[in-house]
Picture 1: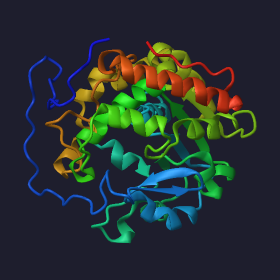
Picture 2: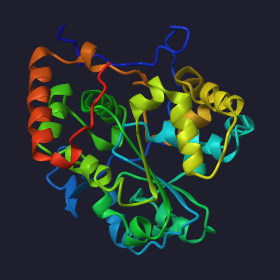
Picture 3: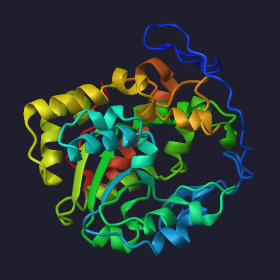
Picture 4: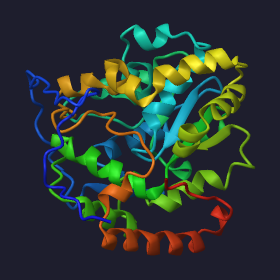
Length: 334
């Protein structure tokens, strides 16, 4: 494995290989008072490490009353949350491609339960906006199962959990941190590797989070689990099973529409799926790279040094032993 240079700026090469330059936002929000390297960046909540500023919402999140009509995508960051949400959007629309072409951002269709901006009044936080919506809401969260509001965990809402192999999750997490100026990440890829193997990454620990959902797949009838790699390698059968779980019986043609509209290149070219509004708001810097950045399996092989890979392998082996409830689960790395 080569030793890549992670110091370079990763501007968006675009779909045709040409570098795309995005306009600088008219208003740049100030950086967070508690950034990535601050001692208070993470706070442990019911064994889940919630990052600033999202832990400010937890009191309100725990009071949230979910409905059996709600759909909740549960995940760790950078494991396919937005991709899965866009797929479910198409399932609910029964393969009607217009839901991908009407210009409505995914961030409008799906509310991030514990997101907040300290500059905004609390009534504008998603958790408080959700309270005013009728049942049948689309929600996503990065909280572990044990940290979910009790009404969401036990109230019959349809939970869909997605996970991704830990090596590619590390790479995707690094690039996600790089293009969030407010978070003030000043590290490199090894710093992110260390955060995972030391069980100190946002919304981790990784294996504990994964196990919290995996062990309940035979106990909670309102949970569906799939991996990022399932969707990449077996999209149509995986989506057919997911649609059935959500009460939809889709034809191969309808699933084909969803596949084409949510494919990596299509999603990267679609501002509503690529979250271009977050660049306009100054939340993400698309001149580093877009939100939909790569979308492949095996990115780690190009990005990891031998030392990184060895460190990850040892950690994965140790954690799989520590979590016997994950026995039988296999990660797909390429």
